[in-house]
Length: 317
Image 1 (cartoon, one colour):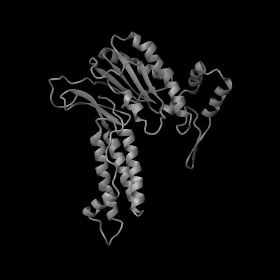
Image 2 (cartoon, one colour; image 1 turned 45 degrees about the horizontal axis):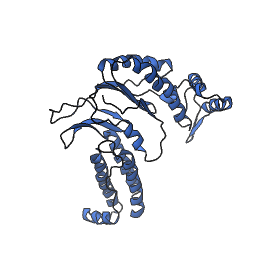
Image 3 (cartoon, one colour; image 1 turned 60 degrees about the horizontal axis):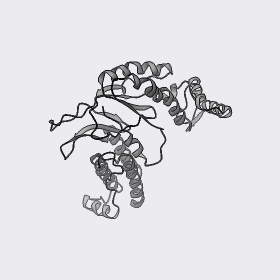
Image 4 (cartoon, helix red, strand yellow; image 1 turned 135 degrees about the horizontal axis):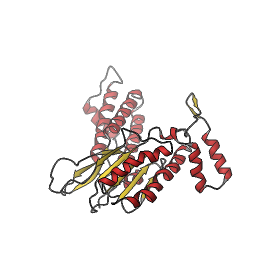
């Protein structure tokens, strides 16, 4: 698939500081100039937090935690219910996704079940280079050789099953993700895949070289545009200054996460679609006076929307 630096395993918890997409994106950035690697696997779990085996989780915690009072406290937290609106839930298995401990416990669980197993038991038995990148319960494994990828694919489900976990049948797949030959001057690479809201693919740069790029996942981009459109519809009667401030915050938040190198066109599409939906709902504020496109252009001069910007340069000089 591709080489992911020289580090053995890159693991990230599911709670990161605001605007810290750099830690996620850099974890899947290729080292330019390294040798070609071929197949890779994209994996996800079915109801991960709901299917965690509490007994095995406690056993894994005891490996590193010797404080009995802390272990008892964690055990009590696993049985605490969660209030979601007017609904109260107290699950008998797993960890409630609304619990503040769930992300941490899930990360500890998979670190022992997956990360250490991959480094200590899987990699020494492989013939080629291999790496793993995981964020919460989503992870990508990359392999230099196809036979290595197929062997790991065969045993991975059994490994997860030992700890009460099930791989998602639709989101778990093995695919060839290699750089196209230099002689290929058009088209795309052999495969693409989605990870953390991005679609990763090969693209030919202006220099003529092929390289891995990422763009906002199509479904995720449409969902962001629809969310902005719904907000504009519900708040169209608020003062324009208030609407502008709220839209600016939403767009900037989108840029903080998806503003990575190679994704400029998706960012621009979000801004242009925001202009259209904002114009649409401002026109419907009154049945007497309709806002024209020229008038909306003058309004944008007073209340400009954020311009697309790349917040993180994942690869390149």
